[in-house]
Length: 115
Image (cartoon, rainbow, N blue to C red):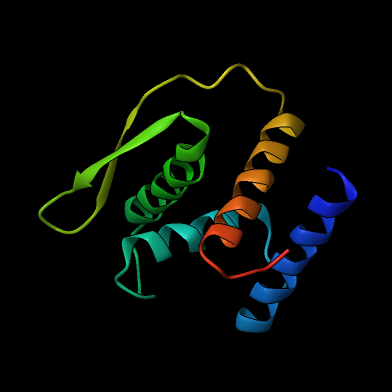
């Protein structure tokens, strides 16, 4: 990550830490974005719902990169996406960098941080 991205990443970590009281890891941030995208507020989620929330977040985060397309909500209000393009094979560090970049873009586009 370059200096500007690292600065924005720290803004995100500090923003979430101020809300939840601890510094989140990447997985936690993805989960929180899934909850935000579901739009039903925080609550108790079953294990499979937590996995679905993370999937929703990943799809939403990677949609601007052209990997997924939002196709609508199901009758229960859960967002659904279709795969547009498969992700290329990435090493773990490359995956983390892609997700961090996507999270930064998300927080900027949602007006949560202002770089």
